[in-house]
Length: 611
Ligand code: GLU
Image (cartoon, rainbow, N blue to C red; front, side, top):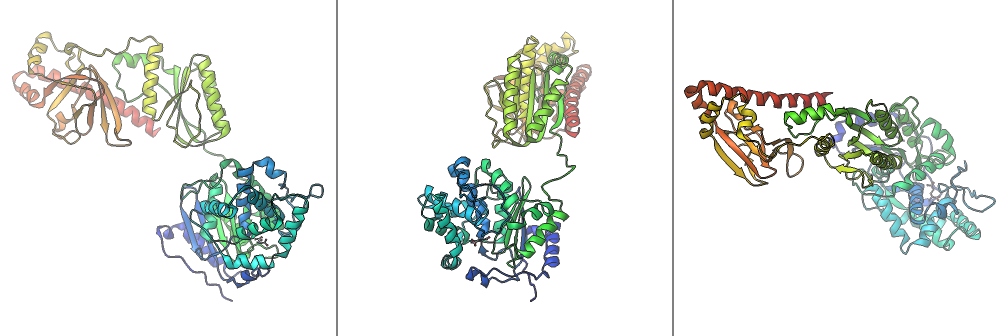
């Protein structure tokens, strides 16, 4: 018999080196022709042993598939972990554990291995345990089959259906499973009639899937229960660990020990020839090839999983592995400021109090390791900080320990008069912050709040809401007579809060000297308001760049409050070059100072970004 794996039509991922590698596995293992298709369910004997498909799905939804990944087959025992998860979710651990254990049996899948003392099945991956789980669902649900198919469909990310022929075939011949159900009934393990439990079990085994479905089912388990392509939750995260643990010790029939050592991935196989394997937090694997070894596992499926684990270093146990450090960077508020441009006096005050406010950029998982690193970072600081910003933009997940830590840390900081500020947490992160913790969606807003708070704590009087023209930064160094000559040349702009004062792309013809209120310079970007480049207040200048370039406006400027500005037109400035060269030179010098200050800020930001 010659193997002829079909290659699925090219998709963008088909040119990937991963697809190339997977095609290599198809070629390498297609000649493996040992084993035979299952025949004890007559309908399964019709499977084509040449079928061979491999699929990998990552947690960000990339799916790589080669070979017969769209050939349909029945899920068989690969349904067992899914039903077990549903039983745990619906009935709770305690109730399920009273009826089904979690110990590996080392026996064949259809062995009647019950705990001699209680009559309960030893684990949910052997038939007795799976029938008991089906019984639990049947007892708890009005339409248990629909409930199961619906749950499996969420794992696969598409609506699955039943292969009626396989169901009938097994139902007509599955005497051993019926016997197991009746035995369980005699120990009162089933909450329903034996026939109802075993019938639901036969139905669940007959759900029709393909190799891609297997990879997505595996990836959903790897992803804490959420299908990484559809984004839909298939099972509560809280039960996934138990499902994967049981798969690790009991998923591969009597070959579970060897599997753990040589492949090292929680997995489940079925007599139809499928196997799926899970690398938690990383990816899911599905392999389909119907010829089975003596243990009832797909011969090629096992070979491919071994090769994948070896070649791609996917074993669950990774000696020497070190994940990225949880604290990516630590800053003080004096070095990493908000986009609010502060007058010189405020800048000095913030620099002097810098160590009292720290910013910790975290990355990866916020769990115990991050909690330990954050607390060490703070304990080792020379001055113990009062304001601590944790920037969670790069945090992908918060586990229970991490969330507890954030809460406890917020409370203990508040108890000594400090404040924990959390910024940038993605909407899905479950933090449940206490009232004492300040919370911002964006780091810039968090930093601005901290600056204001720190200035308040050091008793800084705060920037004046209005600055007379004579004290404006642009006219610094002008003699009174020069100022008197300039004044009549200036225009006035007074606008209400929310006004767009300058629009990107408009022709530019004047410099603005802010004399009262606050404005934000924004460019299009995240959110309807765009991205804030800076916030300017009384005494500051904008519109100076276009004087040199004579172009159009490069950003929008909005009035955050009622605002008053004096304006100096480029035409006036040009004229002064001829009529009042000394005044002109001083104004040019003023513009240069403004540019230098903003360039310094920009440099500091670049230094921070490239650090
Ligand atoms: N329906 C099959 C049986 O109970 C499932 C067995 C399996 O896939 O391991 O015999």
